[in-house]
Image (cartoon, rainbow, N blue to C red):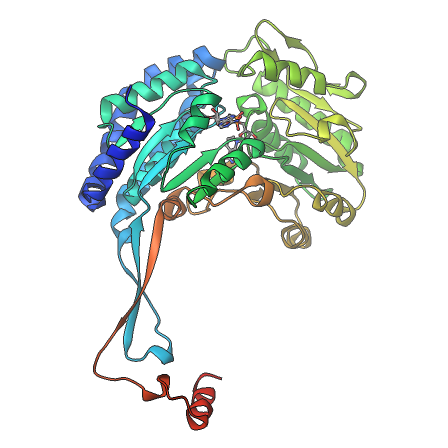
Length: 455
Ligand code: NAD
């Protein structure tokens, strides 16, 4: 394999040739990617099932469908997004036009996480192609079959001086981060996000950091309990809880706690999430399996708690009577364990959550507008949903990303295009008029006039 430096050098040469900038080229590449993904759907499904038994259904609905949706929208809108945008000119610059010229940032590095390996590499790639960048893609090495499949699809579809895959572990990523990129798009943990940010600082490379955290769900006494339980159960146990925007824990009003827990149990049973169900995803590896088992406090199990170590499967588990000081509340769970904390006063519990790091998502189940207003005005978080969970990611008009510890920047749809784009701000001035006031020698009279005009 060529050295990283030469791969990047070749991509930069290709980028500087302007080949990636034409709209026709971008659309062709998006279509090529879509065809390649469609042709390899079975192979992708097989690989991810080998890695952590993700079902065909979840692979399609939570990974590929999202990428296809982004491609479809990008093909439809890339021309509009790439147009020069006029903006108003201020009076001091009269007579002139002002506009923003979108330009692709250049050679992008896309680093993916393991939990949605296809979506988290291909969706940023769609955004990079749409913006007119070249890309080096580094999938997570943890689902190794999936990583190989991503590499093989991209290598068959694109020339390496345009888009390529570099597979590898932490050491490989560390070396890759030594190189100079024009954009780094990283999805992963907050701790590694900090490493990436530091590496990017060396060349002042702009970054998007899609990180994680503990996303709360508030379940108020006014909510539709059955619907809240249905949507939260799906959102929590999807991908066996290994979802960055899964409801990490639930804050439920004390008066409805028992009813809510019963409703969740009922949903778990109906979904048939059992250890032997081939639709129920495995925990990704032994390390995470052991970490999760340690988080199950047996004295607090309200449901589930069983597991199969050989199969790396943990039953959907509910923990009740949980406190903010419990071990499970000290880290992102990233598994099928749902801690339930009760509250009596929404304002007080919101204040508790406010003391924690800003989460990637927040969910609120309520029938009252005042609850919505309170949570939305008090808490800072990446994005979220009211009376639903996780589904906000499927609306590409909602930029997806975190804030503070859960990340910076966002993507999907136009936000994805913007993530790989720089907007050059241009003042385009006429030559038929100029104000003498602007120029030296400065006089008191000029100052008075300027103050009148601009004050
Ligand atoms: P991770 O941070 O361990 O790994 C992500 C990527 O970084 C991988 O490609 C890995 O090879 C690389 N990496 C790991 N350690 C590194 C190091 N020391 N130096 C350089 N590179 C390194 O994350 P993960 O375990 O793959 O994913 C889980 C985390 O990602 C969770 O916190 C989850 O919330 C978050 N996540 C966020 C989103 C989002 O869109 N915001 C999506 C999925 C996952």
